[in-house]
Image: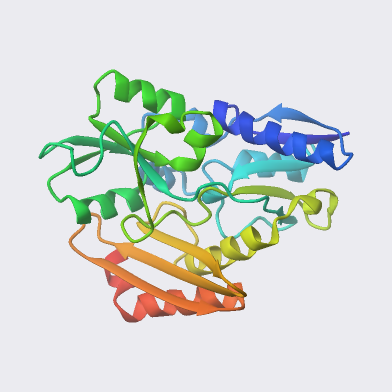
Length: 293
């Protein structure tokens, strides 16, 4: 019997139970222990400001990683987009199961049908910047809380639309609420979006059997690109890798928060880490560091 560490939200528990079932299918029994993270405890501060105030890139991972290092849990299940690219010494990202829908979705209205000046909620600077590039007139406001909480705030009329990861809505059976999905040419997804990450102590091979190699290679390329910019998940940057036969195609975006400048760069390669570095270098040559400040 192994212990799975998970955050306590509805979506996080769905993800942990999904991994529990996958392990059971491999003959490994597991139980789930809920651990509350900094990002869960503080819900009235925008994520970017919270990251600056707490001086940590692991707002939704640190307490789970502490539990791994202490031996209280054997594996931690994360939304991969929440994971910093640099992990604590002694821990590894041991498995990435098959990825769900990686794209962003808007709920409440399509982007085109929103009235001028409409209030749109999102927790990500990446989404804010790219939405502003598409619709400079929108009033983009921070929205925090679990997925069900955000949907409730929309239904109460606090926002005219909200933007979320499609994967979470699909996992919880709420895909029918999606008004529009954005492909990567419009709103480039977050690094690792739609993928789950299984983190464990270095050298622990138990959960490696759950790895879906194409998904792992894609997110490795995305994370290698983000790593070149400091590895935090709250900068206004997206990266998305897809397989084209045996070759990986990686496209990435860096955008000014007001949407006034959007830098895109894409390349193909067979080595995920080298490809991620190459795409980051391409963004830098086009002025990405100036845009990020």
